[in-house]
Length: 148
Image (tube, rainbow, N blue to C red; front, top):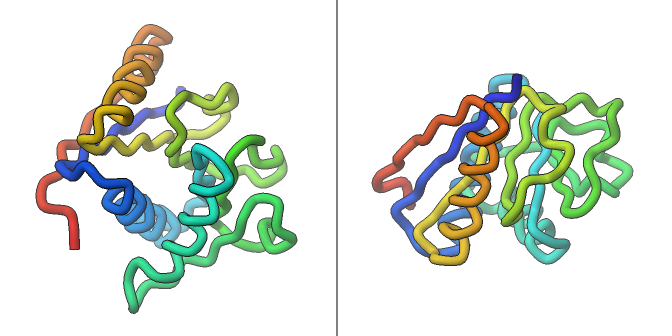
């Protein structure tokens, strides 16, 4: 059964949320897992694409937008509407959209990032409740001082 992890940030900004998403993506990729980042929309997907190149000077996370030809060759993909093709076999999903993608259960792990912005809090509370009602194991990780 898919394991769900909620990472709760003390910050309120989208930048802090994207920065943590990049750090988490780096950690997941470094451990040898394939990851799909699911953005809210194309704009956020392109911001994530750029952020993965710039979030830290000494970091390198090979990635591509899901519709790019390179997506087949990298461990991290970024999409916003469609699931990654079944043959990609990503083990982890990092969900940055407000809702839960219908296809989330094909991943071993799902990560949700919550910051203290009211819109995000409201959306992710609903996600938490939905996962719990469906019987998925859900764990919260309270993060402090993660910026910078």
